[in-house]
Image (tube, rainbow, N blue to C red; front, top):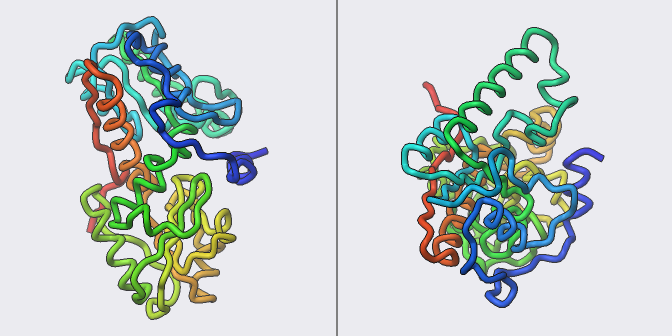
Length: 301
């Protein structure tokens, strides 16, 4: 089963809130391994999960914690220069969903010499991380579905929507009631809200004059109208990693269905910020720093 099908199947799973009584004591949290166990305790997720220590020694004593969306090499360097030795990232470190556990998919299936170039880059980054004593923990499945601070909640809040305006919801997706406006006006509001994350604008498909009363917000890679169309928002927010111009794009154009497309990094930047805030609040005595990545490309005109 591919990742999309797996996430769609699990989309109706129980969402558990961050209630203090649900969390383990953090007074003895000292090591990277302790932090990994703490993060996994926040929400039960299907196994196998990508949420684990990707690289580094679990026994490493925490000096400072960093959070980020994507652990780009320059983000890792910035973390180390700021005294961070445990970095909590949402996305992969080594160019494939299963990181160092992958051996067949993604770049491993590429033709030579590109496959070898990816492997060389992976190995160089891996050695640098080990040489600098950095531990990278992936928090992906947990933070995607945590109530109130998960990716769709955080993205909605960044745009200016309120949790109280959610009228339909399940793991990975929320639908918000918004003041009636044209689809183009709704798209402009979304673009304005995401400007701070480096999103230079949004891609818009569909009828700009169609009236919008509800907006659907998804989570990262599964932010796709084909996966949450049953929640029936008037306008869909989607990400560029998922949308194909000849599928969702052509349908939106032909049917008039309004659809806004944003960057993957923009869609999940805010969830990792909220995770950093959560760690600051709950892990007393341990400094947590968020490293902004935001929109993953540069807009050149």
